[in-house]
Figure 1 (cartoon, helix red, strand yellow):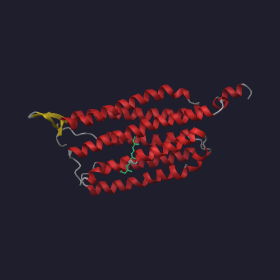
Figure 2 (cartoon, helix red, strand yellow):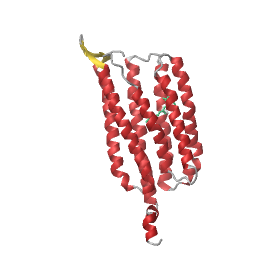
Figure 3 (cartoon, helix red, strand yellow):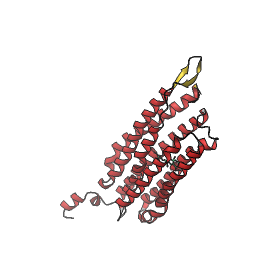
Figure 4 (cartoon, protein in one colour):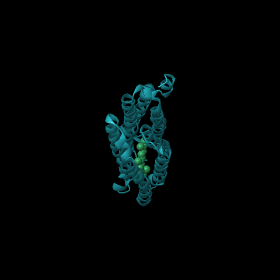
Length: 266
Ligand SMILES: *C/C=C(C)/C=C/C=C(C)/C=C/C1=C(C)CCCC1(C)C
């Protein structure tokens, strides 16, 4: 770990703190709003809430690890130097391994797909997990060649996910109605824009000439992942809720309560 100025250290510190707050607040919002959507969409909201809960927990651990990895330089109160304890980046990948499959699953869960929903969820979730697993050896590699190789392998399942979302799911989105259709098109774009950010952040150490450990690179990678995580988990989760709410509002009340409809002899 390189030494950091007080403002460099604080920027990353505050980014972790903000990201934790965003995850926590989104969790509360989703839990409180879950009852506003029809029962068949509640699983999607539950998955969104799980994503921000899992990520919030991991941000707390990353935050702790960041604090432990640095101490004030005894010879210079204006700088932070490495404490000797490693900064644990593995939390991020464990977090992704759990949350990224859930993010694709919640999108499928909120859509009206007549057949093969389970199999589609399985394919997307497996590809998502594979993408994260293949990216990790490159993330911790010291040399750029290894980083590039695993980064390339991880891009293959990533491209498959984009193919399914933009080509495979096309007809299903076309069949949706009104506001839900617009929101579904937009959430796909949000996913593309936010998920596309991660490989770019991953490339920073390669672009900057393999200088994985300079203060600038560490700051860019950590703050970059924080911004992407807030958009891809909190922003996305709230959009999933908006889709579920739009579909709930557009459906006749009887369709939302099959049991009640049956009782009424409907
Ligand atoms: C909440 C966390 C999310 C949505 C994380 C998404 C992560 C990715 C889309 C990562 C993709 C990567 C590649 C496509 C290649 C390089 C390695 C990764 C893992 C950064």
